[in-house]
Image 1 (tube, helix red, strand yellow):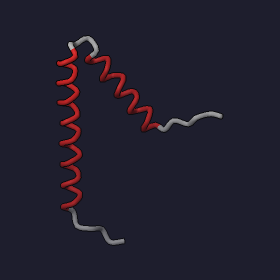
Image 2 (cartoon, helix red, strand yellow):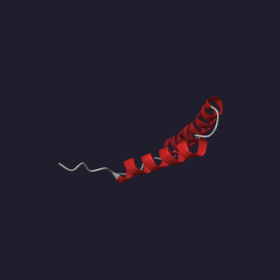
Image 3 (cartoon, helix red, strand yellow):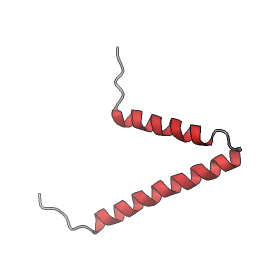
Image 4 (tube, helix red, strand yellow):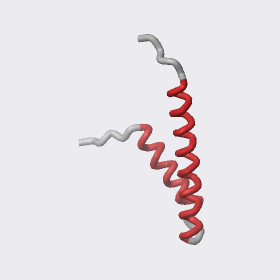
Length: 61
Protein backbone atom coordinates (compact mmCIF):
# COMPACT_ATOMS: atom_id res chain seq x y z
CA UNK A 1 0.00 0.00 0.00
CA UNK A 2 1.43 3.34 -1.05
CA UNK A 3 1.06 6.29 1.29
CA UNK A 4 0.19 9.59 -0.34
CA UNK A 5 1.79 12.67 1.15
CA UNK A 6 0.19 16.02 0.48
CA UNK A 7 2.12 18.92 -1.03
CA UNK A 8 1.37 20.91 2.11
CA UNK A 9 2.96 18.24 4.31
CA UNK A 10 6.03 18.06 2.08
CA UNK A 11 6.30 21.84 2.25
CA UNK A 12 6.20 21.74 6.07
CA UNK A 13 8.89 19.05 6.17
CA UNK A 14 11.12 21.06 3.81
CA UNK A 15 10.60 24.21 5.91
CA UNK A 16 11.41 22.28 9.10
CA UNK A 17 14.59 20.81 7.59
CA UNK A 18 15.77 24.23 6.38
CA UNK A 19 15.03 25.77 9.78
CA UNK A 20 17.04 23.03 11.48
CA UNK A 21 19.98 23.49 9.10
CA UNK A 22 19.95 27.24 9.83
CA UNK A 23 20.28 26.83 13.60
CA UNK A 24 21.85 23.43 14.33
CA UNK A 25 25.32 24.90 14.87
CA UNK A 26 24.11 27.37 17.53
CA UNK A 27 23.94 26.82 21.31
CA UNK A 28 20.58 25.46 22.48
CA UNK A 29 19.48 28.70 24.17
CA UNK A 30 20.12 30.64 20.97
CA UNK A 31 18.23 27.99 18.99
CA UNK A 32 15.25 28.32 21.32
CA UNK A 33 15.32 32.12 21.08
CA UNK A 34 15.31 32.01 17.29
CA UNK A 35 12.52 29.42 17.19
CA UNK A 36 10.46 31.55 19.59
CA UNK A 37 11.03 34.68 17.49
CA UNK A 38 10.07 32.98 14.23
CA UNK A 39 7.02 31.36 15.79
CA UNK A 40 5.87 34.68 17.22
CA UNK A 41 6.18 36.28 13.77
CA UNK A 42 3.94 33.59 12.29
CA UNK A 43 1.41 34.00 15.11
CA UNK A 44 1.35 37.76 14.53
CA UNK A 45 0.70 37.29 10.80
CA UNK A 46 -2.12 34.83 11.50
CA UNK A 47 -3.72 37.24 13.97
CA UNK A 48 -3.46 40.13 11.50
CA UNK A 49 -5.11 38.03 8.78
CA UNK A 50 -7.87 36.96 11.19
CA UNK A 51 -8.52 40.59 12.13
CA UNK A 52 -8.66 41.62 8.46
CA UNK A 53 -11.05 38.79 7.61
CA UNK A 54 -13.37 39.53 10.53
CA UNK A 55 -13.46 43.22 9.55
CA UNK A 56 -14.67 42.40 6.03
CA UNK A 57 -18.41 42.44 5.40
CA UNK A 58 -19.90 38.98 4.80
CA UNK A 59 -20.14 37.93 1.18
CA UNK A 60 -23.61 37.07 -0.12
CA UNK A 61 -24.16 33.39 -0.78
